[in-house]
Image (cartoon, rainbow, N blue to C red; front, side):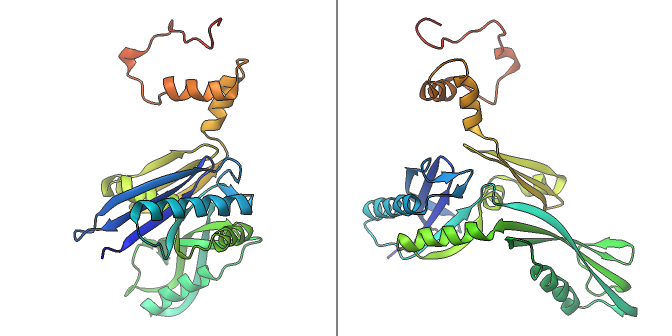
Length: 277
């Protein structure tokens, strides 16, 4: 019997559950996708109502079970939202004269970085940027002779309370978490090419209440920031034209597009707000 892989992502407007099976070539065949409205329990990508979030998760699992006709033992969880940010950190190690760098020395720098403490926050992931060997930057310093070694790291942080709330939601729903992953990194891996990551690019993910910007260069994540600005702000701007927010949302979905060909632009074009305007 096929083993199902189930992933859940918590967003400000909806919680999405997706189930599939892994093929022999490593690709995933998607078998079911379900969503639950999360506007009453998640704000800016962060859980604020534990009970309602737990109920949404229960509904998602039950709907997936119905479609798959199979039980779900564990899920993978994608996290993002304003709780997440990146900070740069440098770990320095002075060495005796003419020391040859070993893998153990490099591992020691990585462990020291991982053990860094931040007020009310903890490290969710750490990305090694480069190493400074005396005055030269190196991606792999092992085997090089030097007196001074620096490790440059990008630490991805999240609030400890977010972790507690998230775990409590899944515990209340009776769902086992197999692993948590950073949704922005998973998104980048799925849509950015190696050439784009290598030459340098910024990936902008516009959500309902937050916009996540991930900057890549030389195949590495260099910066990650979550901006508290999203599609709902556009809806509210349209609603300021003295119309209902639900109507503004419909207008946005019907007419708005981030991609407009220059030949299609018409500065005289007008859209009706209602029957009279």
